[in-house]
Length: 245
Image (cartoon, rainbow, N blue to C red; front, side, top):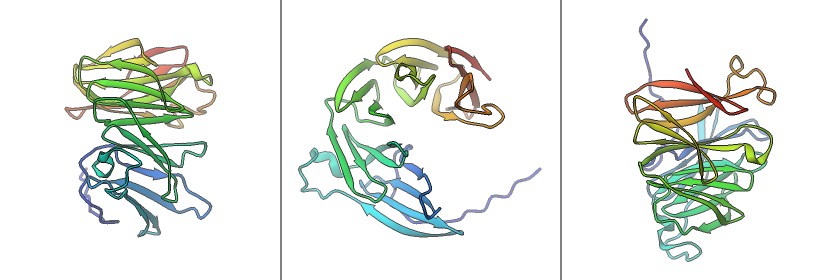
């Protein structure tokens, strides 16, 4: 079977250097799909898509003379995540800084961290912010650094999953450049999963057949991709066990 792919240009943005700087916002009352993109010039662009056509909603970019963040605030956006009670607040990293922007394009949160690595990964769960750089992993809660870990192998990707309804159920999965996925609880190593290839991307995966009901399911599925093009799923049982598929 042959598949023919046809490109369709939705919206023109600046060049994008980082791999984790595009997100689809939850649909609001107008039921319109909105896409947010962070580019290498430090601009955050939101455009709406409806019936195949798109339009610009807003662009957020800090002025270079704005001292509310560090001097790197106008540099490349390194990573992006969604958070908040409705999962519609946008969190971005610029080098070692973290900033929050509302779905309407207004800044509501600024944080200058004390990490030394540029932040290439960010995840937000409730009041906790999880970040990863080249070799460093940190957890912040209410702007305080509550966990820190130095990882010997370079970190390629990060994913945070909630194994149960309690706060202690949060686990972080780090895909590292030594062919392992490290499983962490805050700054404690829980497990290491060996792979034949380096894991380059991780994300939680919900499927009606694998997880008929997310709330009642006994497992969470982590979709992974490797640097050689392999794709697979890790089944994580909520009593905490691992099975590769």
